[in-house]
Amino acid sequence: MIFALDDFEAVARKRLPRCLYGFAANGSERGASVHANAQAYQRWGFMPQTLVDVSNIRQDCSLFGRRYASPVGVAPMGGCALFAHRADEALAAAAHAQRVPFVLSAASSTPLERVLEVAPATWYQGYMPGEEGPITSLLARLKAAKVEVLVLTVDVPVASNRDRDRRLGFSVPLRPTLRLAIDGLMHPRWLAGTFVRTLLADGVPLLPNFSAEGPARPIIAAPSPVARQHRDRFTWDHVRLARRLWHGRLVLKGVLSPADVGRAAEAGADAVILSNHGGRQLDGAVAPLDVLPQAVEAAGAMPVCIDGGVRRGTDVLKALALGARMVFVGRPMLYAASVAGQRGVEAAIQILRAEIATSLALLGCVSADRLCRDHLRAL
Ligand SMILES: Cc1cc2nc3c(=O)[nH]c(=O)nc-3n(C[C@H](O)[C@H](O)[C@H](O)COP(=O)(O)O)c2cc1C
Image (cartoon, rainbow, N blue to C red):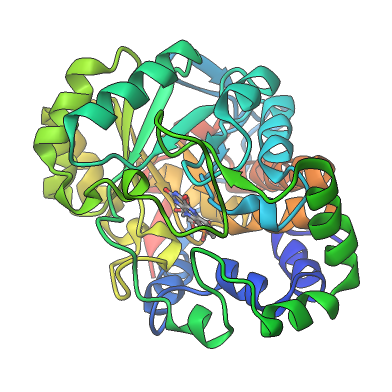
């Protein structure tokens, strides 16, 4: 039975091939940042106010001129098509139906134009090359598709060291091996419901959203030179270039240091998402929550969002009380999609929303946008 976000993980873990579950769950190297993300939330306690009329709790919020039902969003995740049939559409449609933001990953498998038809307010997350030509053409494609919010992920200048994935025989790009085949065969529900169903309906999943150039490559092919496009040369100069060329909202995801948050504001970003990529990039990178107060100070008027390790409504409340404007959730949404597609993701968002409402009432805070530092004590 599903009562909390962690329950989706328990079911997904049984249903997914080991290597695939590991690819989602594991962090890089020793998993120190995955651990830090979860621990960071335990270092804050609540200071409830009693005898407050909490019969009318509110958690709706605004960002970038749009009204959202809750201050939570679905983080961008690549490779989702391996976890559930048409997972990108399921995630987008669920977020749309529940009126929360969804960020489509560059490494998604449904053309972004189709996702925007299903869910017109979808944000797009891109990996930008350190070269002007491909930046210009990608921005033109996004503009034509009427993307409103562009999220640039800046914590992946190079691929990280995921030795646990390699130990399970999993790599990006995916290389079909006997070991992976046996892993798949031992998980018949995933094999029939995701793998065979996807192959029959859509063929091998492609990666059509990395750039505006060339034909989309299959998820099992080596990344094209265009896809990598000197990402290791992407710098603040390119952020400023993207800012000059991009008409919509520009968000930088994967900054952690307050100094970088200040630079993002100076470069004209509309927001940042404090993130260590769910502990999947630099192992040992600090938990975003631990630097949130300083980041908010450095940001001035620019909104600061956050992700990493958020599993409960109380986690959302803590991040909001420390100054976050929107809190993004990654893995639990992917597990929910793998368990029950769009229905699963909608259920996950509803569980989080119910937990936020209950916790606000118990805290004696009538509206999520009134959360502040006074509601917390460092433990
Ligand atoms: C399977 C998987 C794939 C991911 N792919 C991307 C991606 O393509 N782009 C990106 O910016 N972040 C990606 N992330 C990181 C998430 O956007 C987010 O930062 C992280 O998952 C948040 O931590 P949480 O999973 O603990 O909620 C991915 C995360 C997972 C689990």
